[in-house]
Image (cartoon, rainbow, N blue to C red; front, top):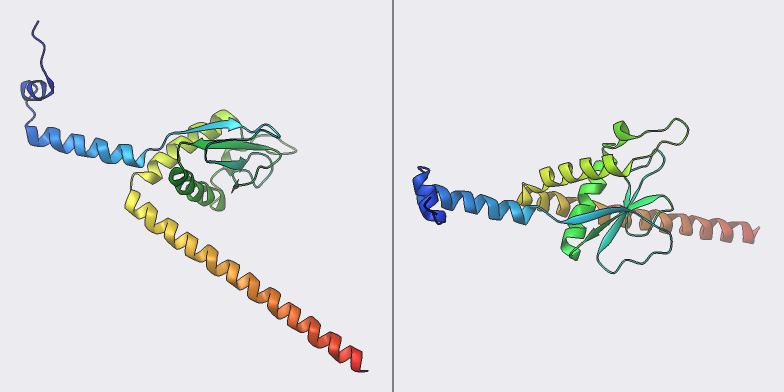
Length: 174
């Protein structure tokens, strides 16, 4: 039996070198969009060296991502900070759209199971990251909205402080 190299094999199968090149290009693009991460149950007081984020796994806010640990949470560990940042916004989007509600189990306090979370999270992140350029635009828009919301809350706090000062001065005169 004769052994073929990659180019001979593709020609023997009837593929042109152009087709093989396009397939390789698609695989490279897919691998850029695919991210490797590990999902585990978070253990209290455990410190993680690699970039990570926490996902709440109990209650009606299950699926909520955060940089600080929750008492009942999963931890998603990444190889680099860029992947962590990208997946944070995917997780945030899933939480805000209540994606996890159908996966909650339990009658008194609903919770997510690690196995179903991990499976669905892997599927959804790979699906959302396939259109990497679109994903980056969406992340930029979400970051801008988050910044504007923070400024808005600061302004509300300043208005309340000014109201207190005016009322204090007014009451002090009389």
